Length: 287
Image 1 (tube, rainbow, N blue to C red):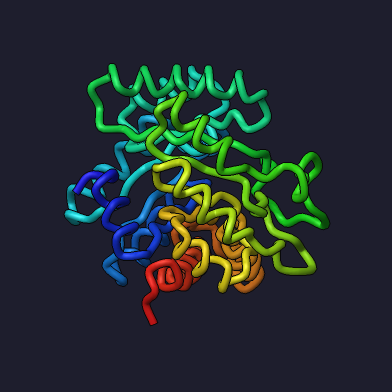
Image 2: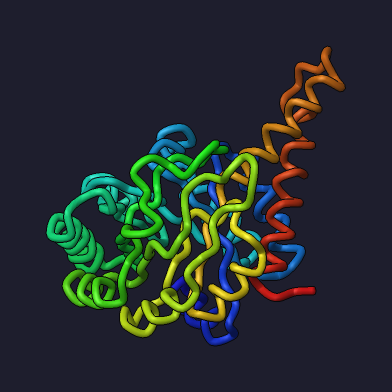
């Protein structure tokens, strides 16, 4: 199935597709192995910085080769693209979806650049979904001591009225709202609870599938409620980075003389697979 059909199927089942960011190619295998073992679709995400590191066309080739070899629903997203040019690059390269992140722009500027991306995607003739974002939730995928600077959990949340207007004026396929979620994860506690009622109302008003960004650190019960309220894709990044780094530190400490990366990187990949497995079980309601 196409990604669009896969998202529609997930929404019909009241489950969500897990979206996991990678910072290097071996992380792809940790994510894919988890999804394949559970037999559920998965989305690989690469932000602008991650794309520069792994290569734009290179990551497309890797994900497509896995999809074709294993006949498996693994998809690729150009996560958090901050300009038309970087979205265009992803469309031309063959990504399955791309996010134009204009959350820090004014509403009018956000609509303008998002619509430009949607129009280019439609004219490209490629099957690529475009996601728009409204409501600032921070930018860094890292462990935080406090709520990210600039994030206002009182006044900065997306309203159903804003969502409806934004989707109508841009024509986006997917919509990412601010409903209490934040990028990164808090060091000393779980992230704030999500506004589930707002999420439900936004899904109705927007009329398109919702994407939850900043999933790392969110309480498990909030994920379940958000998915029931209309979230069809959930983003996880920081949790994977933490798991990878911790496992790598231990592997290097335990094997100080090892110089072959494929040997000391096995445990970090397993750590990623473990986190992804638990998240996919939760998102897909697998006991």
